[in-house]
Amino acid sequence: MTNVLLTLVGCVVFVAITFFEQLPVLGWLGWVLSFGAWWLLARATSGPIPAGVLGAITGFVGALTSWMAQTGNLFGFTTPPGDRFGALFGFIGSSLGIVYWPLVGVGVCVVARLVTSGRSVRPY
Image (cartoon, rainbow, N blue to C red; front, top):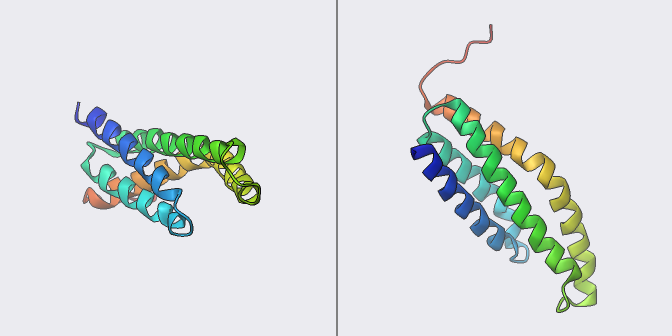
């Protein structure tokens, strides 16, 4: 139950990060917020496997909401013509992010969980 609640909280946090990323220039720091959120959420999970699942789900939610925002910026009626050029780059980046951002989430969450669990990772 705790992992389900953490996943729901994580999804809300990643939607909020998407809104933050819509700010000009300052929004480029959204990845720092994402890594911090994943680190904190993974520390609260019950193990590396649930942490990886949490990272994948929240990463996908964050990438999907970013893609939706960039699609709205690209095709929106209120977007000035000059801003559409920048929105095109955001659209392409967020389209690729749907594939790689959940994988980054898995990696960050599993590493965070293993580092903070106090167990050593043996390479053999």
